[in-house]
Amino acid sequence: MDRRDFVTGLAGAGVLAVAPLTARAALAQDGWTSDAIEHLLPTVNDRRLLLKASVARPFASISLVLADRRIAGQRTDSEGKFWEFDAQDLTPNQTYQATLIDAAGRPLGDSWPIRTFPDPQDTPEKLRLAIYTCAGGHDINGTHLPISTRVRLLKRALSFEPDALIANGDHVYWDLRTVRAKQSGASPKAAAFAGRFDRVAPVLGSPNEAVLKRAVGPQIVPLYGTLCRSTPVFFLQDDHDYFENDEADDRFVSFPPDWFMLAAARASQKLYYPEFLPDPNRPLGLASASAADRPSGISESFGTLRYGRLAEVLMYDCRRFMALTGASATFVPPEVEAWLRSRMAVREVAHVINMPSTPPGWSAGKWGEWYGDIEAKGGLTTDKPKPYWQAGWRAQHDRLLHASSRMAGRIPLFVSGDLHAIGETRIRRTGEIDLTANPVVSVLSGPLGTDSYGWPSFFRRMSPQTPSGLQVEETQSPLEENGFLIVDLTAEAITVRYFKWRYEDVAKIDTLEPFRTTVLKRKG
Image: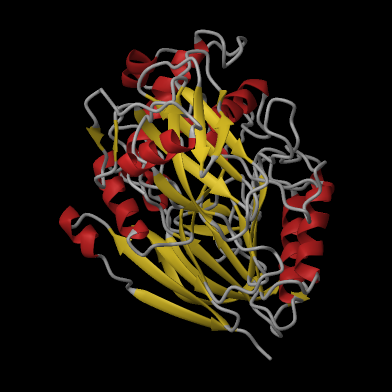
């Protein structure tokens, strides 16, 4: 349905008084037009849609029209430029035509289609996912790929028409206090462009709000624009999304996040990208869920992509709730771990995929990893202690990998980001736990925006390596290249296609083909 059909249909039905656009329409990256909309990022489950949007000028009210329904938008900022729309009681596996309209019923841009996921009891034949990490980076500092190059990589991933897109952490780079902050949010260029945060003032509703928009907006809005308007997205937060790198020494321990870090991460999420919609098998009382300032049942840190009886992707932020309690420490709270293990134990779906923000199978010697290994002369060692590292993190890692390996008849697959690399390994043993009957497959998805000193070999003097206490078969050594995954799931198999690009002609991105394809088949 084009805009003319939409206008005629609504006027004929007497639903809304709709007038044609009078302002000059701005051309989006793919020909879709709007005179006001700057970005659209939707997520869905089988019966609900949550949409985050921003507009070029303030509005007193904006509504989302789906078919013959009108859903009032909720303003999420102080100006009326950021809005969220929560459409409930939708029909599973149904394509809806969506349009944003102002208070007078005038469309703010073209209509677009968006489809809900299948009912959890349906049996879809296939699912396609596009996955990447580390898409953030502000052009003001010149330390990441230019936004224009990232857009080309994103458009190439979307050209494969995925059913959903998963961005696993580091949508924002604006570190303020850690070692690299002087090249990030604390750089003179950054401060001159965005201003400085007041750490004891609220993030929204104070001068901090303008600083946040100037810091975060240019990392998200020009990258995504309206390209993902018909592709449900799942954004998982990692350390930089809390405005710091994971670091720890006697001067400063960056995680768990302090009040300001948490408030800034929550504000970025509230304005720019959707939280996770409820799932009947995910408790509403888990940490970060059901907050009073979010739509009902929403989870900020722990999410589910459920696609009928074909697949369930479990996404979990390993930063917000990091505990520093020694042998009992965890990356995710015990109640979250119990939920993850329970979902791996049930037999409802063909595939259960783990997607933590911190990857198993490799270490770059960083503090906030599952592993106690530390960098030494370009390699890893456990001969000296890693300051502030907690043994309980490794214990939780072992329990999760063991639960995944015990999924008889399923592929124990982990897909993660964080390490700015592309890689694949099979973990056959972790500590005293034998996984050889069903080795855990761990994949690094590839970063969309990494450049210059963001590569581990530059900043940490080493590429990711296998940590101690693991027995692995590394089937793809980590590559420090930009890229993404296209993952296809059927009832019988998971096919992972790897895409990479670095320092070549940017025009080659438009026809990028996979350099590696891995087919993982279910047993039995």
